[in-house]
Amino acid sequence: MANHKSALKRIRSNETKRLRNKYQHKTTRNAVRDLRATTEKAEAQALLPKVVAMLDRLAKNNVIHANKAGNLKSKLTRFVAAL
Image (tube, rainbow, N blue to C red; front, side, top):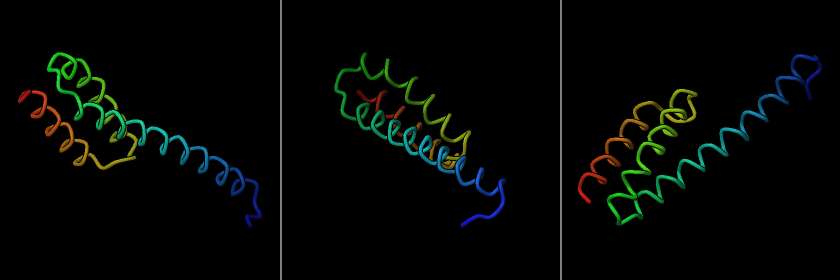
């Protein structure tokens, strides 16, 4: 167990950040899944900017790699355009 006050604080803050990252990552994955499940073009076009913003936020905070976010955005954009 940690012996320094700063180490104890770091443990607490790391756990808080881990839970926040986990929640945001799972929420984004669900949004991507919902977007891929849509069959209506208008509905998909409305969802796309929100999902792209979520992916950008995850990439900015290093929850996912920037290239993964770019690949997902590209594939989702092509999917929506093909509807």
